[in-house]
Image (cartoon, rainbow, N blue to C red; front, side, top):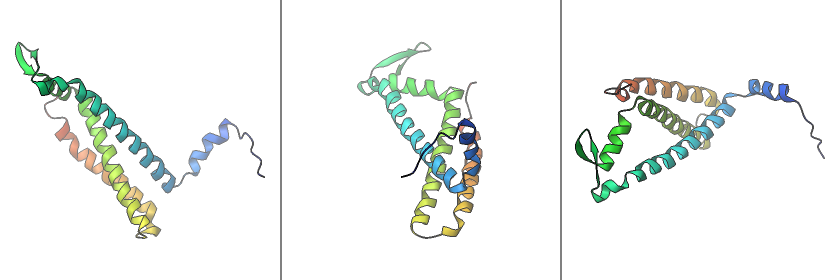
Length: 143
């Protein structure tokens, strides 16, 4: 029977240096999966607040009657924070997709010897796609 003991706080923090690319890929994949699940529930909650728009309910915006659904979405899309979060969502989704494809290839036996390189490639490609999309997301936004 194995014996366990408390290694202490210092040693636990030092273990992060021992993580290989595969461990970081696993951590990032799990984290991005949880973020996407959180986004899904947040998305449903926000859209359900404007459900009255489906019945034709209106609200007054700048002295003009606007559909509740349209007013909610226009109000959110005009915020810089929301646009910034959308860029983050894109980064999370792209990495999760690319890492998922990498994992699929590993499961199929393709590129087993290059797992580290493919993980780093997915990180670089995610960064490139995200940076290239920033101007699209941040056009016509008020800070």
